[in-house]
Length: 411
Image (cartoon, rainbow, N blue to C red; front, side, top):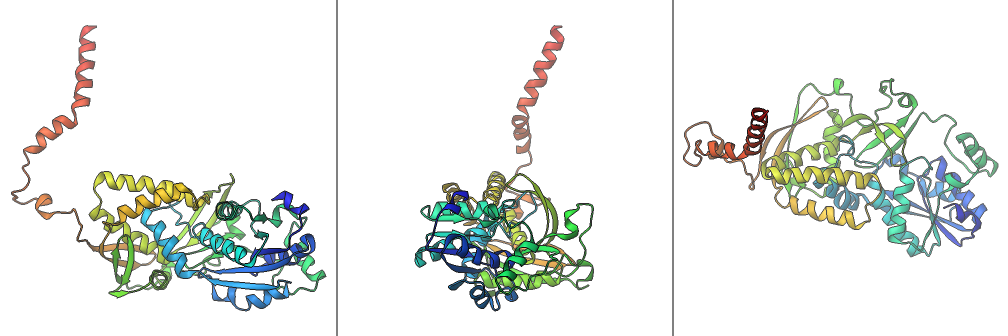
């Protein structure tokens, strides 16, 4: 917040990634606020290279301490799987890989800040993106007594060159270079890529954009099949082996990535008003999403499924806009959890050159009844009943036509 620049703090906890931005923020906070800086690193399943040596890097930047919190199971269990139940897809395409990670990171960050006795928290999100809203809204909901410092909105540093120069003047080591082609965010649900050739929407993404999934054209020529067990709207086993939520996602990521599953290239509407283009890779999440929707086809009646689809739109907007810690999210989640009680069964997915196809599905709660849908002789459905139903169903249109005819005749 802009008024923070005039304050002094004893201790600030920084959401730290080890990149150029947050490496610069550590000494900048100390110099401008005279505070001790504690770095907080959330392990949400990003690349292991991003975590190697990160504690030493944080301390070399001037941090007094670096807290690394393993949030992988909590992230998948309490956020990813809960979101998947709702069917949320932002603007009909995006599985919200970045957005859904923000609340679990913010929650853990706030808990660490309170445990450490910090006066404020800080983050490296820019003033152009969505993450500033997501982080700061979460802090406001969970610990409104904490101030939030957003350096990119208040400092005078404007470029990578200036950030690197700032660190060099203070003899702080940093492996970042002047040229950064892409901006990426990774966790165990997805990897997003922005920048580079993607800044022009007429440019097709080069193969350098994709870092996780196999090019579908180069994926195996033989399809791969797996059986998923679904219980209460969550995948609990793969090929008969029960696993934790994170283990399920991690394994399906492997299967999906090698078959080129989960690539999308979209131009989306950011919360702050501008459009941005991103390429997202969500292999395991795409498989889970399709599996859940397949079971829903069996167990949800027409009206209930329509409600779930409306719920998905509202929930996706809520997650994207950083409103996880709100009463509305709790209400929508309660509805999704209630719907999920019937979403039980098994599906077989076919993975082949970028596609996920459900080839088999079954559920103990299935509303698909062979006796009713068969074209052969049956004893439970009288086709004559349809005549009266259609007459009543079309009654408004019939009355409108009769009235129109009467008016025309009166002329």
